[in-house]
Length: 215
Image 1 (tube, rainbow, N blue to C red):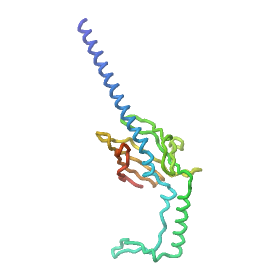
Image 2 (cartoon, rainbow, N blue to C red; image 1 turned 45 degrees about the horizontal axis):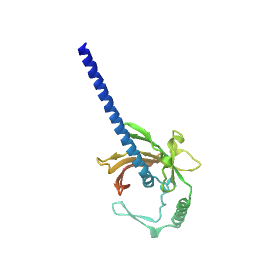
Image 3 (cartoon, one colour; image 1 turned 90 degrees about the vertical axis):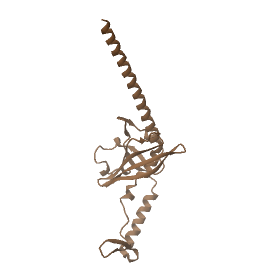
Image 4 (tube, rainbow, N blue to C red; image 1 turned 120 degrees about the vertical axis):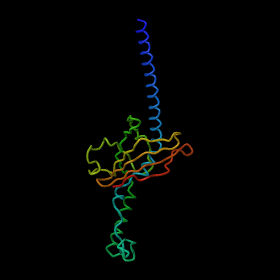
């Protein structure tokens, strides 16, 4: 009987210890998630500015203007703009006007944003609607769009792409970190970057952007 009591007592201790440990781990995870959320909230405007593009400009490169010059091996060297044809001069003028019209357009450029951030095995939703952006871009929840072919559909507003962001990976002292972003603007239009940032005078600043892939 005494032996059974001892075993029962040990089991209770083990269960209590395990429960306390799990509670402690859960508290730590919640703290990490909240810290991740707060930092991401602060730097999201800078991420949008450095990542998103107005597809009306991004997908409209300048037309050829001048004669292409190649070396003896057949490699391109430069373009002699003094040899531009009348047609090329006309096309360049029209292109500049198109770009100017887009830049003067004050309507918002809509980006489909996935607010679900995976962090330490958990998902949390970033409340981006209360985050004030700096420029002409406006984020809209990706769940408000059709589930398929988002970037290939026609909309009644200026739509430019889909933005997805990973969780932030911090250094040991939580004074610097990095995350990955993906920006998709078409079937064969998009890129992925790693964004590095650090704390400078109590504010998080982007210090480097590395390109991971481009399409």
